[in-house]
Amino acid sequence: MTEKTDVTEQTSGSREERFQHWYLGSLGPHLRPVLAIALLASVLAMFVHALLFPAEIWLGSLFFIGGFISVPLLLALVGTQVQISRQHVTNFSTAICLSALFGVNGVLAWSYSHSYDMPYEGVLAITVCIGMFSTLPLRRVLPITILGSLMFAGVKVQYSMDPALIILVQVFFVLFFSAISCLIAYLVQQFFRSEYRRQQALRQLSETDPLTDLLNRRGFETRYGLANRSALRNGKMLGLILVDVDHFKAFNDNYGHDAGDNALVAIAEVLEQYARRPFDACARLGGEEFCLLLHDLDMKALQNIGQAVCHAVAHLKIPHAHSSAGRVLTVSMGITGISPGTPFQSAYRTADRALYEAKDKGRNRWVWLSNDSKSGAGVKAAQ
Image (cartoon, rainbow, N blue to C red):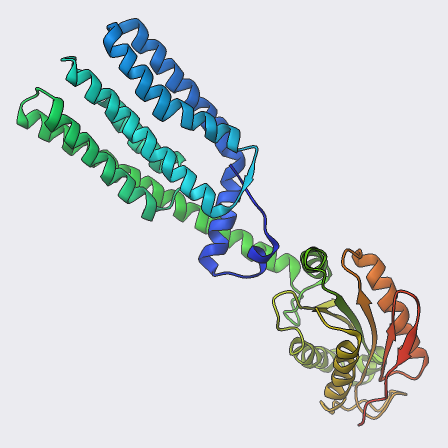
């Protein structure tokens, strides 16, 4: 069963929900061959029963194995081609496990009721498979296997002619294999939790700027894609603000690279204050260039943020005696509104043209440029 990918699930939700989303998505492609093998095994079991057991026993086996094991497995195999939500995947897997346990215990009850001693190894096999292949967490596997053990105990007490000691030993083995199933489920989840943390750490390294801890260009483009799909679905506008530190090369040359790094970190902290909502993003695209992505804001709100950023950076009062824009370190900004569905490169080019216009007009200011090339210049920040 393929898990449906939802943008909001990738940007919100608890850590456990994000893990479960990733976990089922990772296991999904591997379930198809497992389900196919299990389905083949159930069909083979019916064939073996037809060859080895009397007709009255075989007919019961056909009903229970076919109806409660083979058919659900077939439905699950077909379901791997359909996108359904994480919660539905979990519930469907739970139903299949319970159905399989009911089916195999039904075969035992049927054979015992016809005075035929059917081996109970099938219960053990299915119990272990639940922990190994169901993709269910321990909190699901534990009650399922306990319920299966109770089913088995009830069948043995009600229909079996075995001595009480034999029944007790067999129930003990079913409980023992249930414990093994739970242990397997726990170990599988722990392994995937470790893998998830490793992948998240690698992703963090690959998408984060090491100096400022902001997104880098790669991470920003990924976030832009998520926000753009959400905006397209909800009909919301996006805003893109390119931020460039004025005369930063001169600042580095005269104050040193350590001072330059400290200045970039301080500016990053200012910009982060304006990207707090789930689909907002702040990035350092490279060198002294930063970028803000803001969700569901109109032109006036974006221009107000541009003006606020200009003032906030100037009010850091980082000395810059070698800037034509003022006595302190300042920034210039290009701002544009983004229609839902606009590719990143197209939005970036529009904001970049606005940024160059801000530089041409004396820096330490913002310029708005819309898709129809209409622009508006911001007021120079007070120093």
